Length: 411
Image (cartoon, rainbow, N blue to C red; front, side):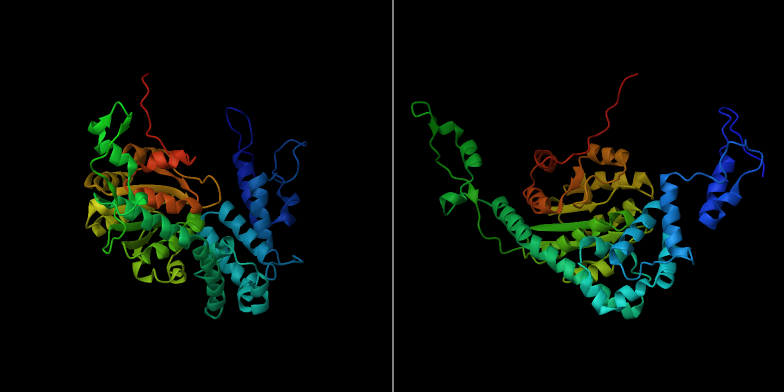
């Protein structure tokens, strides 16, 4: 094997890259035998692995090294960590193969088959996203154990979030219905009342004497808003998928709302009929695959019957795999029709997400508030959207980084 030298820098690059690939394929036992011929004597035998390649090597070793002394079958934290490394350091097509191999080689199915092991595991949202990523390769006999873990977590989340959502959204719906005969002082909208009575300002008393009150109607027996949650089910959106599904289920229980839940990757699936059970929703989601946001929004656009009374929440990192022009044209059409569109780059406690900043800027230019939202803030976000307040201003006031349109600079 002759070395490949960069003509500008003189560095040996291509050969090293090929050696690194062989090193990852063959494992640590092949390190010394991979010394490239024709190199200087001071070049160490075998390729040096950078930090990412070391992580890849460790993940491959746990799965494919027949001489390993330990395994992952009995340790849920190691399983979750290993699966996280695999998703981080390998492309999705390779991840699917490795996860399927892991079910047999590492005995991951036993983790789900043994009740005493599952009982020792503390269910959390990370475990749920792990189980959902393995959904297609979990043995049939193990599915009930997996579902019990998912159910435990979704019930915890519902208990934590339901009251906040119901209170925030129903309160917003009541406030958005105005009346000129508020029943109680607490029902008076003082800001609108003062604005409506400015001509009755009394200079001598330095106050406004209202002749007409503007207040909130306290009861709305009919459906007031339509909500569409459009959920990106690509592998990077695992935690957002869990929270989005739980919120969708909670909002579906509010009589004054109609709620639709649409999940997508390169295809689109309407999960609205499953909203009475978040577990069914989550097992209807297929984490992984590509992303066609434009196709999903085209479908959602067909669901809109009352644009002025519709809130569409797109939850996606905006890594568009389809035609970007379709995405932007559908967003503009929705906004122009009167639909309140909000784009959440993540619905998660995991911190700042990876997303496409250029696409976020395009959505912002189309008038779509685009930012990441913490789950505990989502109820107030929906309240702001239901009341048709400025959602971008609301997000900024809460400290969320709202995407801005790109500005043209003169040259």
